[in-house]
Length: 170
Image 1 (tube, one colour):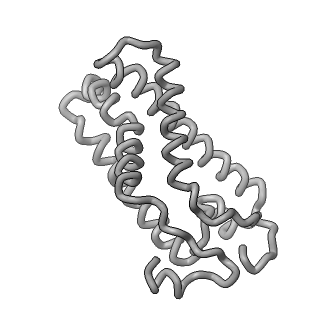
Image 2: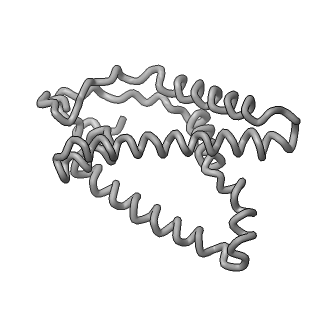
């Protein structure tokens, strides 16, 4: 951890350990890129939009760019782990809205993982072996879970912080 990150650490917050090495980071990034279905869906998108294939990618880039800079601004203002749920809570202070945002983020992660599993089991792996797609999708999710577990095995124990918590560590 750099001295800048250490000096900005909030009092009462446990320090973060660097446990994600370059090999695991590479697997994580490649899995995320492939898992989004970009390669699995590009042909289908091209079949529908024809020569304007660049337009959906440009639109996705603009949305991702604005999202990234919004998060960059918010992370500087609220340097805590919680993402969209924390920012929603700080902006509106409505618990049900905070819950709905957190639930939507969780659902998007599940949807992304299931899309990646189906693409892997039905599209990519089918080029090499014939096997039932549901089995390959489940094995793909299990492999990703093991990679994520190994990457997070040495992290600091979680603190129990909720939006209603008044602890100085939260």
